[in-house]
Length: 626
Image 1 (tube, one colour):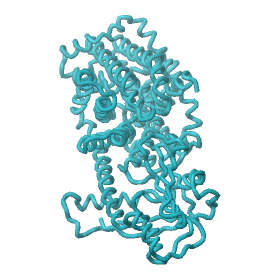
Image 2 (cartoon, one colour; image 1 turned 135 degrees about the vertical axis):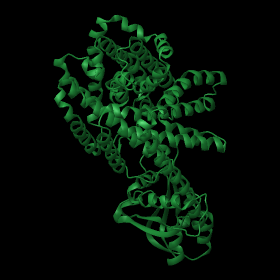
Image 3 (cartoon, one colour; image 1 turned 90 degrees about the horizontal axis):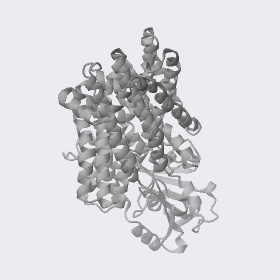
Image 4 (cartoon, rainbow, N blue to C red; image 1 turned 90 degrees about the vertical axis):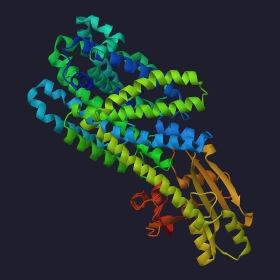
């Protein structure tokens, strides 16, 4: 696909979130802390702050630098953390620090995934009150109707509808510029607001109000984190070209137009975006804005699906059912459980908050927290991988880190006016991730003790008489070093085995994708007469964990050639977790053990996860106390 086509495609998926920020950002800056719209210094100062946030955070930090820190072309905080954890030799404390950053960053991104659809669709629906004040009562019902449709169609995937995302967003950005130009022409002096001196003057003139207003300017850069998360869809060059040639110019023109409008008509600050348009254009603009916010919401929802799948592959969350919505693109997935949780959360936010203004405070904490965490991980990457010197690191910390810290500090003051929500969501998710990660390690250790080394098992088979049954048995198993419990049980109780045994271990290697030619490694265990093979199936976090597919690939490299997969039996080792009443250590408290058991029982069926045919799958179980 050409660079131009990729750049147009990126308009919807990558820039949908930041592209709908003008709907609410300027309004939040000017009236979120007392109406300062009639203050010439405040308007120019707000425009200056928004402009330089876009330049420093989006253009310099993300488009210019952070998008270069990719994991085989894939971006996002978990992808970056995976690269550092699995490819770099890090001290234990550094690795633990990176894992914590990844957990908190991912949890904030998921909180952002709840707020973005709510604030975006609400802000578009609020255009109804500009058309006619009597339509204000329809804002929430219209927003809910749009969101219901949006979440109900998620299971269909975005492959087909995604083809029109780019062109619609291109029209959206050009329309933003078009409705702004007449106001800029009326007041060409507004262009001077891009000078950073106006932000400094505002801060000197009204330091506390300017500090609070700075906290709201972060709404203008929301989507920068999604820009990085969606890097793998299009690549860095198309994203960079789209930003420089269309996105940034149109955003800047729109914010300047809103500033010129507010100076001419201070009352327009209640809805500066829609008041830019002439009355005859407002109905089509509301429709276009609704389409743009749906696209922005879709991009964030898809990003949430990807983040959760990456978290599962990093052993931060239990297995979750993943539905592949496209046979051609591994990144296009649907997670029913995640979709349901997001849907319920977004609806509650819309009903509870009721307006984009009320959601703005909550949004700021989620965005600034994610920006800071991603920037910290980037600095570790730049130091460890690119070998940046401390002078270069210090410059980045002073400019980008200093601005992001100021934005975060300004939003901390809004905790009691809505900022508590993303903190609460993030805390719950981090506790769940920590509990699962720790519990999985404990259970894994107990499993290893029960199953024993594979070498000892093979030696035992050599020394004892075991009857071989015609056919093939496949044992999906998570540890290359141990014998599957179901295999060991078969020998212990029936003293028999199928004549051909295949142990399949699915290994997540920490990259987005593994080429099919490199996925399978086949090892013969014991002597050739025993016919026991081990298949190591390497997958990336965008690849399917399809065990029958692993067997098909292995048939090219081993004695499984010619094997009839229709006759194969798949045998799963399943462990039932029960309370360990004797374990009362403070390090692993009762409530956390109970939470882990609940999460384990709610995890997806491994038959579905590994794409096993149910009619050919049997289960052998055991009990683990935890």
